[in-house]
Length: 98
Image (cartoon, rainbow, N blue to C red; front, side, top):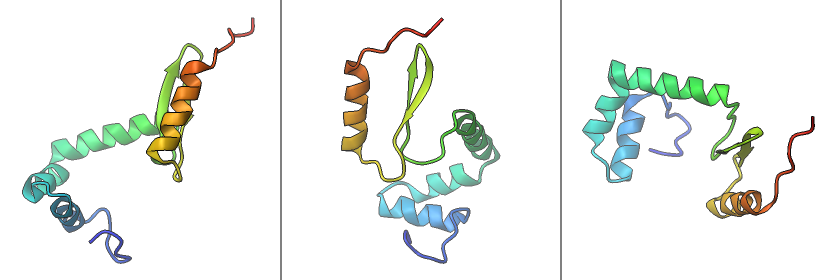
């Protein structure tokens, strides 16, 4: 199912197929996807991502004293995100200019 050029992410059958491929309970995934409560939760998550200016996945938001920094983009791997996070955590951040 994944990788099909004709499959729409908005199609519940696509979610069912992905759940099956991953060994998840396909009925539970489809039920959560189609339920009004599930839709509301998903839309709330999308709104939060827009507020954080997340435009690609994976993105790792890092909350600092100076605001939210984002690490990652569509080409990021777990290793590259871990390296970027390690660098942020070990690099001193200068105080804000006054």
